[in-house]
Length: 253
Ligand code: CIR
Image (cartoon, rainbow, N blue to C red; front, side, top):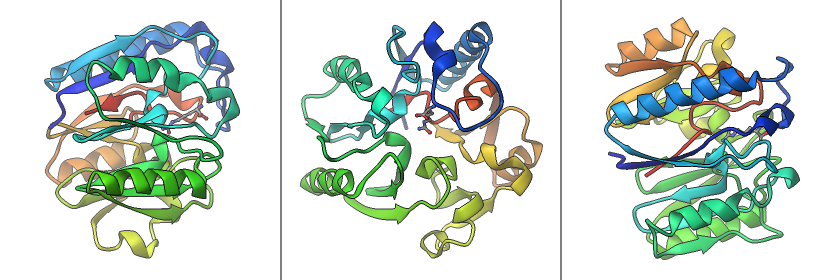
């Protein structure tokens, strides 16, 4: 169960964030409203939410997940692979000092973004992507081993991040989309396959026995409900315009 969540308010510079989505620029005021809704939903799941101020010099800084990987035994501060995002981790590290004494860091030439990390029990799957490189993985796995965790890689073909196409919902249930549907590595899970027309909805998050699902993906919603979960829809359409989603918007620990 998660006790804490860290989020960061979107800045006005959000509209200049990195994107491949072709959905136009996000509307800042709608993004703020959706961010409020996201925070309220998390609070209703019984977690304490720490809200960091916007950082205007980093248009993508609202996607805090990419800047750290948090476990019960340590916090690992990442070195984001996107040049325009390098530096976002500095204020995250500051914010984490209140919660962690064991802090580790990924350093250049290694890069790693939290969106490429999916935890299943004490194992961490790491996507090798345009954002996370071999050296980043090597450093990350070394740190994890020191804290008695294990890690392995998954090569990405098309997705931005590993969790663009996968979400672990606990109890051996895994949402899989696109290039991961036929992936051998994931066949051992009880897979919930995301319909091709709802690819974006693979980025869900399990939070204290409920699953947050992006609003507007009825097939995914029904499939997760059928697997026995309490499903909560959250509107994140403005963040989708920047390839971001439910997992990217918070650090949960
Ligand atoms: C980026 O391209 O870095 C942002 N526009 C989106 C980051 C999404 N983060 C995530 O999937 N963890």
